[in-house]
Image (cartoon, rainbow, N blue to C red; front, side):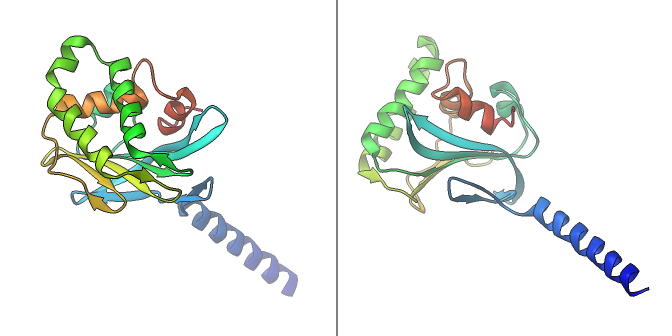
Length: 195
């Protein structure tokens, strides 16, 4: 009788432990990521996360949160409500150099016609990254799109400028990670939850 009770208690404890583990934050390269975040009063689910490599070096952990599961750029842009992409840096990088990499990523995934329409956003983004000097391990850069406000860029816990109102600029920015020529294919697949 005691053995049955003990076995049942162990089964219940194991089941509870598995249920808790299913809802716990995940960890990538020492960076803890929550299952959900809230943007503009809307709860977002972790769509996927991974590591951005530059050669053999780990640069940052990237994570994408959405209102519903997305598996490509078109689905991401079409998904209702807010979206959030964040980067938690794993090594030091000059922020002006990082801004140039973002610009190159946009150029690699955007036509000349589209580029001409987003020049003001590109200039504003360049100014934001130039003002931050450097990102060091643990610093976080967050890109939040809220249809009611536009694109807000956070760096090191602070909002960097008035929100960008242009949806075309947001799409171009997201193409860095999810376009036809992403900066890192493995990171693209990881953030889209593609195994």
